[in-house]
Length: 263
Ligand SMILES: [Zn+2]
Image (cartoon, rainbow, N blue to C red; front, side, top):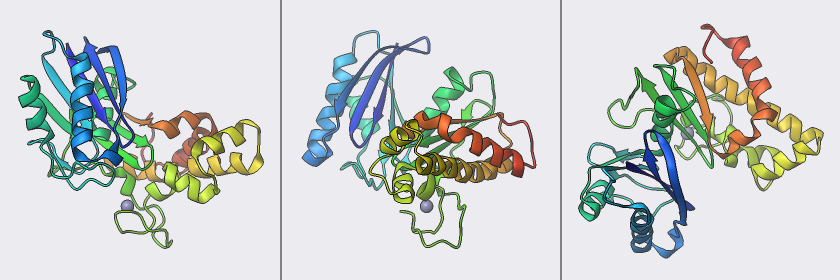
């Protein structure tokens, strides 16, 4: 049995995994407003609630950038944990091997090994949340490049627009298809609001989701042309609005694809 932990800006989610299945899970608040000490305490508590003598290892997903080899977090935008050696800390506390990696990487690896990508060798994952994260799995292994490969949210899809991404560039896909981007473009407070409007058949909302699909498709075509993967898997909260954007997304991909057949 192992423990998997996802550290987000709002919630810490943790679960016990046995034979690739989550058999128990809990959620605690991250409480970033209470500072570094409290956040570390909350991570510890989350693991403690699940830990028992059968736990052989702990795997943690955290926001990047980070040093996955040493398990040290980089400059964090949404967590008061910059430069924190998470791996060392958890290892010393619980005395089992600990692995730390980028949250979108571990999402992709999870899907590639046990989820929608189980049958495939080459899997690309995209997490559509507040921002957009990406992960690259080649032959069932995560590809890290020099350390932080897979920043697919920063693929440029509109170079001549003046919308600045947090990376400092113009026209990153994150500025269009993330929660932040969707709210800005559709002038709504949350993607949920836009989702509910679309459910009520509001024309503007339906068209905003369609536009999201087109922009996402343009981003994904860059990924397909670069990696020719077996499958691209989309997760994150925004993926719950799948039915409103997938048709436009697939149309755009089919229209532009050099390489056909990626699922
Ligand atoms: Zn960017």
